Length: 325
Image (cartoon, rainbow, N blue to C red; front, side, top):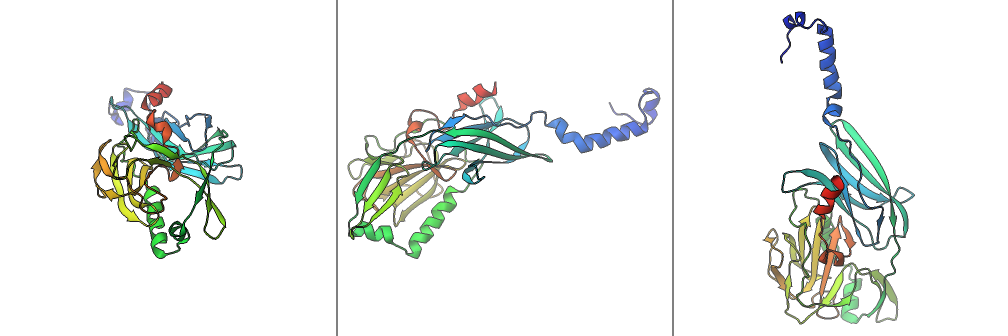
């Protein structure tokens, strides 16, 4: 119904001033009326080091969603952004995947969410407890060639590291390609190193260095086809100093699988691949003691254990809808 000043005679309780007040009220508070659902954080209370926290953020018209895991000093140890997931019926909700560093100290942390909702700014917090896991130790003896690569301080090595970081920290909210279970990248791969291994390098001069292993090492015969673990877009296909022939696939916003030390590459940057497509062949290029594939998963640039996602979905859509009910 359209109300004019003449019509107020038929509505004795309505005056021009009350109409003006109502219009002003809608202008000032319209966003609060439209956004009937306030955002909230739905996530598990516990997570393991090297695990992935799946977060659901109900709320209408949300934008600029960012999440971080903060310690007691309000230092952010891991960050990610939210994106919109839509089911087959057209229902949608904001979700996020947050990687938990394998080096994190067990204890209580704060999951911090910031988001915009029209003219409203939201800051929400939730306590998350990180459990304790004991990772194994691994000793690797470096020969002269491996040691030279390890201590290399060339501009090429630095430039490649900068480009890698730029790729892993990119967040394309439209890149929703793979939500289901990953496929192993090798048909028959033997595990020779696990995610999170604490490595000690014995160097030729007798000194030692330490590092953390960010992926899984899988052995097979040289030349074995390496398969894409899931559908996605090739964002890197290049020969690198440390990782040799390398492929990186983008599966979800901020979620990437990495494939190192291959003998050959069979894909190019920008190409879309399906789960199971051949992307290269197994080799020993770069910083490698022998023929193997280093397979890695990054979530929000944080290395996480890819093994659980060989048996459970990368994005548990059934659980999302179950927790929304």
